[in-house]
Image (cartoon, rainbow, N blue to C red; front, side, top):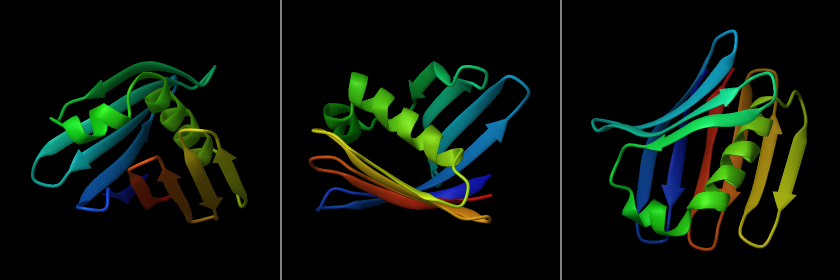
Length: 125
């Protein structure tokens, strides 16, 4: 599965490519910046939906300051739940993050909003 994400902080917009690679035991969510390479990678155990490994490979200090630790884990969990939706909409809302996913047979649309960043995009099935 492949898709596009756009991250906005009010001053700049960053275009990112998104992919999901699946094998028998794991799913890998990979986010890349065109012409730069990997920005983020998460490996998830398909049996128990737990994050096994998470890496940021790009000097994303602006992301890192806001999206660290528990917030990053929450984003990945929500994103992974969105990938597993079929033909429905789901919303999440807590003190640090709002998210919305809309799934159709051919595409998943997602919007994540934190205090300073909004990330929106889609993933084609």
